[in-house]
Length: 230
Image 1 (cartoon, helix red, strand yellow):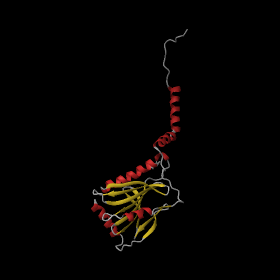
Image 2 (tube, rainbow, N blue to C red):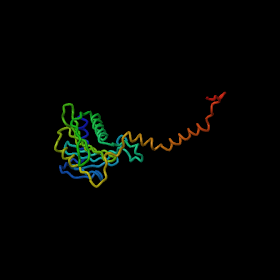
Image 3 (cartoon, helix red, strand yellow):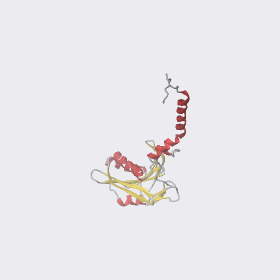
Image 4 (cartoon, rainbow, N blue to C red):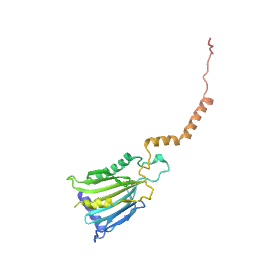
């Protein structure tokens, strides 16, 4: 696995100018987030990866690679009960944890450090990836805003630089003037209630049809002799 990550790092280094500059510059990911990246930075917009629309910023200094990814989790839903977005902190952390474990499985690296973090008043998630010898290869910060998941990944398979990854993730700046929510979804209980309620008219009409059928169409049973009670 180390060879694969090293190949990716070398590939990024080759794609970027061989003349490396250690200066850091602030880049606008979108109207919500700014981030600092070193050297020459490349951008890929509206890239489709396994059917997921993804935005990329990436740069490389020596053996260190810095990658910003913005994933579209789902299109804006017109109906609340169709949304799969988180609705509370527990469901938000499940998305973060699922991403973390997916990256671990894909890279065949072990999950090292995992912790919930705060950026301003927002809930984020930070994790590291290690090899079988506990050597640290990557550090990643996650943030979910509105219907997008943001990933800020640093990896270096030769000489993991803690100060670089800390400077990288600590440079994340959130625009306070933009409306942001991390809990745009609805709970399963709400979805069930909403679904039933949205079909209220159909249910009432169905009941009325049944009552009409019982009252006017169903034949009354015949009787032979009517009994009188004393």
